[in-house]
Image (cartoon, rainbow, N blue to C red):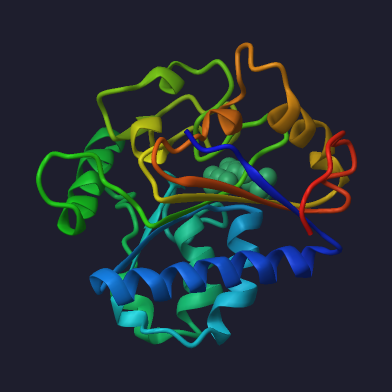
Length: 245
Ligand SMILES: O=C1O[C@H](COP(=O)(O)O)[C@@H](O)[C@H](O)[C@H]1O
């Protein structure tokens, strides 16, 4: 089981650059070995970091397959829609990627949309095994949630559905679709990026907490993969241990 490797960077820009460098290097390696790079992306600050750095990357975009670690169940024209953030911040600059990004369908009932979404993932990972993403780019909210997996929510224990609907998200909007831990912890690489003093307490709890009743972000431990954290100095300011630059 992976132990987190934590990198502390001077600034938010450095976090964004390091995150994008890791993603691009994993993309090159995956494309070289199996001809395809499968990534899950998150909303919130992770979307901002990726949209800053990825558009200038030199890569074979047609070999990418981009899914969402979680998505808000809102129409595409809603400001909360994560797909639209990527459409405006990445696809508008990298049109070659547009055909390889898989949004959820917010026009059908939530449970159906979750099932349909798993069907889209199955186009890349056929059969009934647990999908193995090359990289999952994750964010963490100030309550320790990641994807749409919230503290003490029953979905933390979900071990059958690989993609789950959630209708009672404590953070608005209430309707969401999320990957669950069987998929998250089967990834080759899970990478978090968190910045700002507002995240310092929760970063300390997640990375240095006792392990009793772990927060969702602390439950990200790929069994045969790695966990990497990129933090800026403000988000890392309450950590007691030393970490890499
Ligand atoms: O609601 C969400 O929040 C988390 C964390 O966002 P952040 O802006 O605090 O980093 C995000 O990872 C997730 O995709 C999103 O749905």
